[in-house]
Image (cartoon, rainbow, N blue to C red; front, side, top):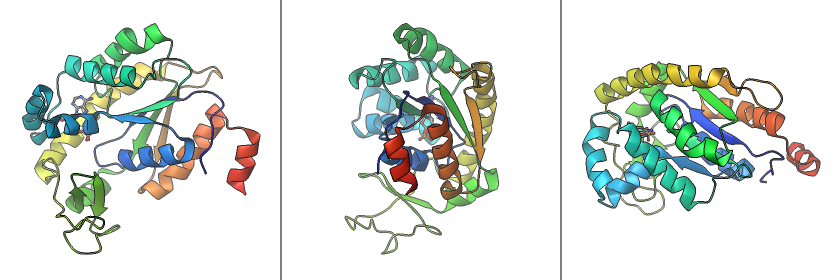
Length: 245
Ligand code: AMP
């Protein structure tokens, strides 16, 4: 069942590409009704809709590069406004944005500070690079639905076909090992300054808003993340006992 948080949680989920951010995001939505914005999903939608941003994104994403900070900040601002989440009353999760220090600064100065809704929980997923590279080598997607398969852990029932529609599965164009290594290096170089930027911030209980969770699989990471969110933001008592029953 879904749990209701007592205090709104405005979460940034940081983790290397392929670390399972999408899986954690889906489970948080299921557990806490926590809505999320994924910058990568927004860009893939722009590409599918053949917008001007989509055209620019296609080549950059294929090459494992990053889109300009100002474009990304505008995309996220538009999305947050469209969903009316820009208020200190709402919980939300950001996945994939901010990904550089200037994006974190722009997010604060142009979007969150004016709405009294700065981030209050920054989660770093720590997953070993060799595990990630193995996962990527085995990842297939069904593009129209976004369903993701893994040839080792979660293979399709019929090889190469989506379980629901029977349509062909493909590899993400940016899932090749050379591009992926570049994305991992890029991730490391951009993430340190972001963590540094948020590290001195504390929440209303005077604890740092930055928290790291390590694990080799989503099943190991999720229960720790769930408990930490409950500890920091609280859930109503009735719901806690129902959850632990
Ligand atoms: P993801 O699905 O988060 O792995 O993102 C896929 C690709 O989209 C990245 O490799 C980048 O090319 C692009 N992208 C996603 N989010 C951002 C961002 N915040 N800033 C710049 N580029 C981004």
